Image (cartoon, rainbow, N blue to C red):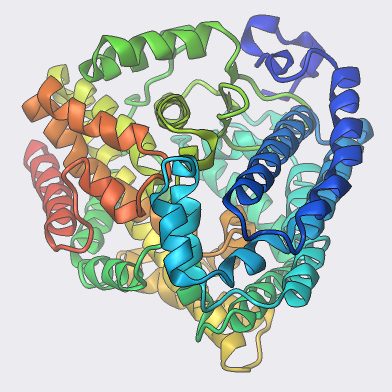
Length: 593
């Protein structure tokens, strides 16, 4: 199961980045053109009073921004193919420097426009000429009080040169430099441990194999815990710096404000899920009973409670299954899926140096791309459905909206992807019986456990770590690790042994470097459960509403976009629906035993 070189993988399993640029040389050509053009944007400085000048400036800024995005997509995805390649490390670095240069040269635009009268800004927002920029002006009106002086905004844009260093350091460590000791499979053969293999081994029926993989993984992070903690604290301090500069009382408030989502949504999630951990405790105790383990360890939580129930399919078979499950979304949806799978949108298999995990990226300047590291397991099949949910959300939004409105906020980003997972699960459950049905019900419960409960636990950890910095309290590896262990006990209960090494798990969560992101996985699944049920119950008539959600991009505030699909996360109903579905699924599984 060792990784292979990228050159050994068939071209049909690789994404076609030539859809962005036909060659590295073409990338260089555009890079130099953009680099030379950027200084000309300064000619509008001090002239942003007349409509024609404002429009011309915004158009050139937007076009330049799109070109830089195109440069970055290509360079970063080429690097993700093999993070060891210095040529693409250099291209990414050059593009990041170009972003900083661009930000510096256009930093005057927002402050100067913000100083226009409120009436003027409202007239621009309502103008047909500026229709593509209506969201920009709406945001400008909203941000009028937190925009700083030209000099201060320029300084903040320059800070961008190094403010993301903590995230960069973590990914270089996690993707390229981390070393794991070899582990033994169930036959006693020594195998190379990788990030991708870890997920497979944690589902292995042998507790000895699971323990070996667990210890190999977590020892590597424990050995670096002081360095990793200081790196993470640097990221938290960066968040607090930006929040304070803008006049916010907490990093969370600023993060939520930036997405135009009330902080009460974050609090509502922590309250709704944090007060409903009892059913999760019952499920953990049930797993211990079914697995017939004297001691249930943290490394036993990912093994299926039904022997042989894992669905192992080739990539082609997995794609066919996903397409069948998502056929309820209609012919148009399926036709776009076909394009994605057949026209080089997806990079399928793991190779030496390839970035770990999975993601969907792109849109506006090109069709979306999907990175996978496919192994034959149920989880990986669901990952395909998940990432293609992202990709089609991006596709619909980019097709319907102008580039200025096509990007959607992260708050709604996990909904379409998780909805696809729920639809896949329920598609399988329609015909599943006996042991297969037991397996799928337990898999669905684990989706709730990992996507709602676990991500909410992560969210509590983030709120805590940021609050320490905001209060000026000391932060160390021990303080962070002890808090994580405390939260682990709160969410998982007494039926499981909270192995000492679990306290270091926080140090391997990459999303912690994109602060206050993970809670959106939880709210995303909570919304997705309601949407999937509506699709299955109401059919095409409801999908028309859901497509409005998929096509809205960032044209409305996130909660309003979600309301297009008939879901309101300011009300109790979606949370109650999700918690009810978890309890009912657990009750059915118990009855089958």
